[in-house]
Length: 420
Ligand SMILES: *Cc1c(COP(=O)(O)O)cnc(C)c1O
Ligand SMILES: [Zn+2]
Image (cartoon, rainbow, N blue to C red; front, top):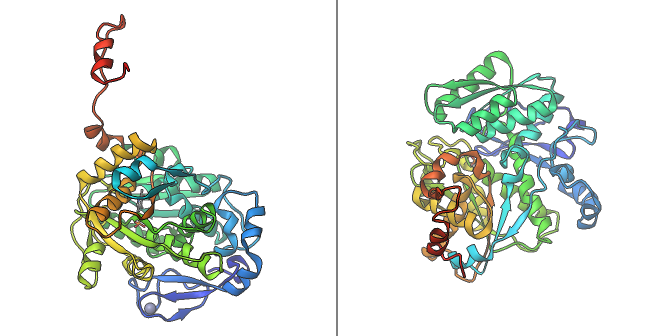
């Protein structure tokens, strides 16, 4: 499937279930374990360390995620999509920090990617590999962002995309898919149903499957958010990093990126990872609490991007949380909606529900005493609020309707305490 020169410093793949090593080119999951045998790329870190230092990185002018290419399964001459993925800004949010009772809070705004979510990091790498393998069609099933991101990156790379979406996909995400020219199959059923149908179809017709959980390439793309956070903060990370969890690939990727920078000797100290799930879709958080294996369950939350009842990558996610010394917690839908409101009003960052769950998680963790009040924290804003304005309109309120001659304007401004 993949040749050595096209995978850079990759040494092989390891199964997260049985621990067995497999050669480069093993398709998707572990041949011994089947679907639970998610694979993980391994690299020749000593060689990478000889090539990649803080100084070398500082001299690179490319701000996109390809600046970390030695840490990705690509070769020096891999063809890359001509859109800029990664290099997203970091915002200091002191007012939100005070509101939550934290010493400081940074927001890593990954909603500022080309199609508005962190998923672009994974999809960009997915289309690079699909293109290299000569697959003209790339497919995925998604609650929204993986799909819109794949459709956008495929369009940029000149590939066709086929997307399986569940019925509950928000309208703006659907609009993105259609505009990017994807063939959209709306499955009458849940995300689980869409996932199964996509996988079956890919197997039957030989398309490249972008589903993050089973395709180890995708998590590698998500790692770059971890690389970038380390470099942007001058290799000095906060006590905690919060991120929301659906399948678990984003958290796993974030942690792998950070751990790699530690392995390369660029980081002194790693942060604790706070994985945040919605109360109504929390199988991984439940497994963290009970120590039992993840049980499939129902999934119901306003945060459509993390509405995952049958997570695929829970092993990687739970290993990452444990290795970091962190924790998994849950937040309610109303805590998520609140967080969208105060993050927008106090920091000017508009997060979609699944993204604001990370901020809500920090709030809940402080209240629960899991985080000390003098902690420094960072929340990964995984998707832009414009992705789904319908759910926030219920909390955002309504505009004041006024006559064109200005009658009543003064009263409104006075009532809002805007007249000094
Ligand atoms: C996909 C997604 C997540 C969760 O990522 P997983 O890999 O499924 O855990 C969180 N937030 C947003 C906005 C997403 O699109
Ligand atoms: Zn295995």
